[in-house]
Amino acid sequence: MEWKKKTVNVAIQVLPEADGKIKYSLVDEAIEAIRNTGLKYRVCPFETVVECTYNELPILLETIHDACQKAGTQKMLTNLKIQVDFQNGVTIEDKMEKYD
Image (cartoon, rainbow, N blue to C red; front, top):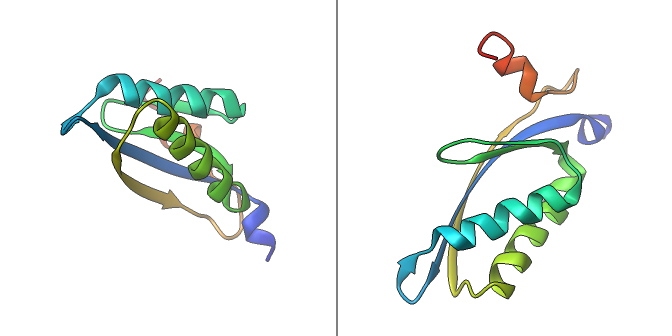
């Protein structure tokens, strides 16, 4: 399917838990893992938005979860929002250009 090769926007919110508490230092590990992928991203107050293809999404999620687990996360809730345009790619700028 061709649309799976087009750029999508994924809003990723991770809530990593260690010792019974949400740890913001572990959220930093998730953001660092995203940065290390080389994908375009934007950190927002409640989530991080990433541009990737639909086909790249499983690898991105695995990378984030592996980094958090390695950093000491014991449990993690991950919330996703995925925006797909079946004809065209979706960019962060599509939604943000009038605010930048």
